[in-house]
Image 1 (cartoon, rainbow, N blue to C red):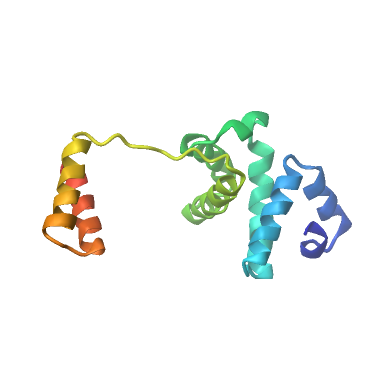
Image 2: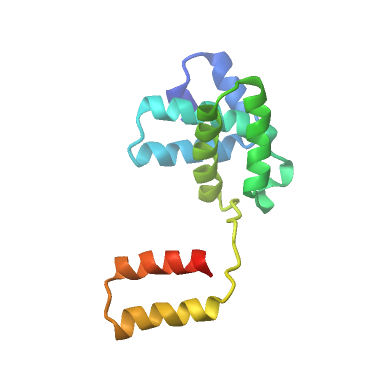
Length: 144
């Protein structure tokens, strides 16, 4: 994949010699197979290279949003801008999920049992549509 994306031999070596080269190349191939454009793949390869260089070697044990935001802060301290941070997170998170390394942030909902009963009541007794149940579940979750 690096061969197709990168024209100079120097760039190809830079990508191959960086950490997690096989994982990055496999993900880029997956994106290409899913229909990603050449320009999109180039942007992803650049961002993934930066991220891979700043990941710990134990990244395969899981990366959470806190660690990813720290990596993003390092980059945005050099290149100011919200779009840079957003782009990096939007590239890194799917890659880490693809590898099975992403740790989802979970929020414990107080009164989860009550919320579950409310959802069951809306769905089974009131006969509300799935989209309506999801919307009211979201609002009730915030309230609780």
